[in-house]
Length: 288
Image (cartoon, rainbow, N blue to C red):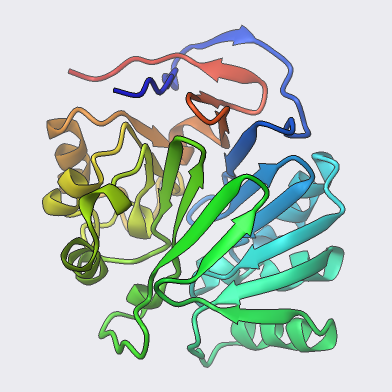
């Protein structure tokens, strides 16, 4: 079994070490940025970068400063997983601050001000759009990105299910990023994909740990060695749901939450994965 070093505890931070702001050429970094009750993920490999979601309306400046602090001047890809405010609310501000190669988004519209603001910036800066669709692949340095959902011409009852679901492979390491996709999408992926193409080392839970996602069957299919939940402290939805946490615990899957730890950084050398905060290793303290 592949070794994934997950040093996890929100109570005790060990071994304060400076964090390299530029990913080394053979190393990939996935930053799960703490934006409260919202989503924002930054992927870095060498001089390449991909931003997946950009937090809520108030988070644009926070995300922009975080990216600039790492010395990033251009974003090769920006992914808007779906047009809800807690995923694209800050994206128009981020797009204004950086040159962007392409934007990836599902081919759906949403009648809100933040969605219209995003599209105005895309048109003004003439950013090329790649519509997210099952089966599309992107080569990103030594990272292979595959879009697992939404399905072509799919019509979902829950708008969250239009989320662009991404699976990242860095050599032997894999990361499955679910956006807000729920149980219907999970069932579709289980039935249409071979397990080896779904299994992943790290799973970013769908919909902030809501009970509408992360079914027991899906967890068994993915079989992650770590679960990341992007969620706000004391949020009004009471996410993550207790039943979801129980499903993770019953399968002995370590849980890493941004509301308890803050920003999480996964560093991959292609064989091992180590989690950090911005300045520290995170020690593991699995609950029994």
